Structure formats: structure tokens, C-alpha cells
Amino acid sequence: MSVILASASPRRRELLGYIVSDFECIPADIDETIPEGVSAEESAEYLACRKAEFIAESHPSDVVIGSDTVVVYDGKVFGKPESEEDAERMLRALSGKVHKVITGVCICCGGKKKSFSETTEVEFFELSDDEIKDYIATGSPMDKAGAYGIQDGSFLPAKSIKGDYFNVVGLPAARLKRELVPFL
Image 1 (cartoon, rainbow, N blue to C red):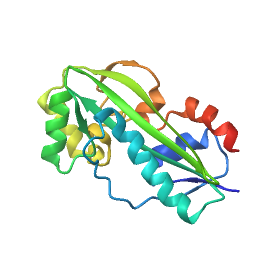
Image 2 (tube, helix red, strand yellow):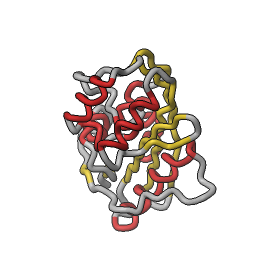
Image 3 (cartoon, one colour):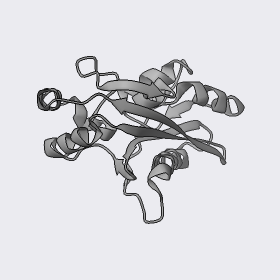
């Protein structure tokens, strides 16, 4: 039995390495469209399950971990930005506000499945136009939910964090460690 992370995210790879020393990464190439009826709060867990189930189909005896992170503000999901303009729109919306970062996780193995989501509240400082433009110019926001990485040392937008920091990075490591026990 192997452990597979259904992700190409270097941040998730690093965080899973805190829990499991030997695993492989196989990204799940799925359609990430959220269907009608799935709420913003449920969308990350929904996508995490889709990713894990997709990889588990071809690796049924392995422990497969799928994960997805979304930023939710004012009832709207902020996924990865589609353009620099989209990134700017998201960062302006989050500036000076509190939002939720929700990471969904799904573990599949041998027909068993466990899924959960973790929510962390993040409050941003007011962001200046220069801060936003300079950060977007780095390219870093383009592959991150909500157009930011809490761990990006040159940006540092968070005034406060209520909940699991690692959840905001992309994987709720402490909870995942506990949820993995029955599968390993």
C-alpha cells in the first residue's frame, strides 16, 4: 500500500511530508466546475472528493488524499485567478476584510472514504495599490485560491488568523494526521 497525494501543489507536498515520509504525487486532471446546489462552503470538500476518487479508480489499494482550497468572501468563492485583472479584483475585495479559507480533504482506500473540511478566518490589512500591483507582478498569486499565498514572505497581507495556519497554506496537517490513522 502506497500513499498518493492527488495534487501537484508544492505547498501540499511539503505539508504532507510533515505527516507521511514516503508518498507520491499524482495530479488529478478533473473538471473543477462546481455544480448548482453545492454551496461555497461545501465546494472545497466536493472538489477534494472528486480528485481523490479520480486517482483512487486506478489505485484502489492505495491511500489517496485529495485536497482543494477556496477563499470565500461575502458568499462568493474566490478560486485561482483567471488573469492579472481577476487577481487584482480579488485582492481589492479582500483588502481590510475578514474572509474564510476552506480546505477540503478526502481520503480514499479500498472502497473506504472519509472527507472533511477545515475553515480558517483571515483578516487582511488594508492593501495599497502598490502592494497589490507589486505582488501581482511577481506572478505568485496566479496559482493560488483568492490570489494570495499566506506564506509569500514578500507580501504578508494577514492582520490576523483565526484557525489553522497550515489550512490557509493548503492542507490542514494536524487534522489530516489524525484522520489518516485508520487508513495507515
